[in-house]
Image (cartoon, rainbow, N blue to C red; front, top):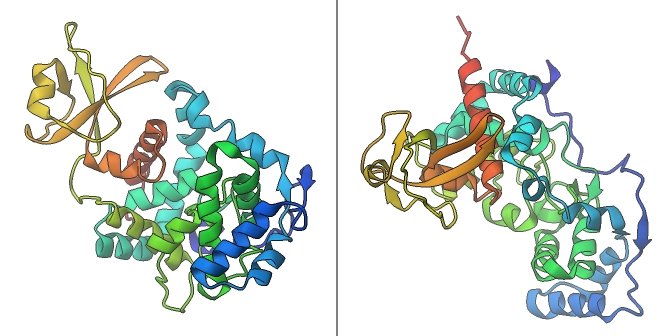
Length: 333
């Protein structure tokens, strides 16, 4: 099937969604835009007039501001979040993608020391294997959020700066044509500009990074992201636990694993699988469709969360990866 055998993406918004445009950047009257251009000239050596000319192409969009205000991770319980990603369609397409590109995926997995099914699952959760990587111009998204979304303007201003620093020479397409999510994430793996700068790789060796139309660059970049963030091959990710009636209440401070399994057992949490008693874990409690779920999560689960800090996201990636691994049996004679 085409999904497994070829990349059919594009980096340009030929058919971008109809959306309410609040304004074009008012370069003559809004000092923030000119200040930004001066900063890039003074700090990074970019030509101020060229930065302003690119900024002038952006569209400030209300739909971007609406979307950033209601992410699913912040509004849904696990019982509602899980069905979004753990569907037969996403599992079957993940199996097809893995089987159709097994040599590439396993070569990258072996080279970077990452589980191949995790690479596939990330791409599946982020963009349904390249079928939906967003329809906003990245420039529009980052300009809108950098200058018109005060709660995170500093962060997105930094991402906009990095987009300019990547430039047309490093990316496969002009930066004012790149397309991605409402938050400025790009390509099949949904890399924001700083992630492109720090983790994306030219895995096909053609001298540029193409996260839309080069499967080697897409797969290699996701694998490298996990490698740099400390994925440890062969180690556990998450194990469901049975909580005793008198189990100690644990208020986990984030997803970093800090308690040895032997301590978790002593506190009343029995893992459903055999695991090293000295392995470090933490407790994740989820509201499942059949009631509360107790999970022991490990370092590799924390690594997944470096992609998206929501524990629901990390669990969706993990469970999707397991379904893909279970079904993606190598049928080569």
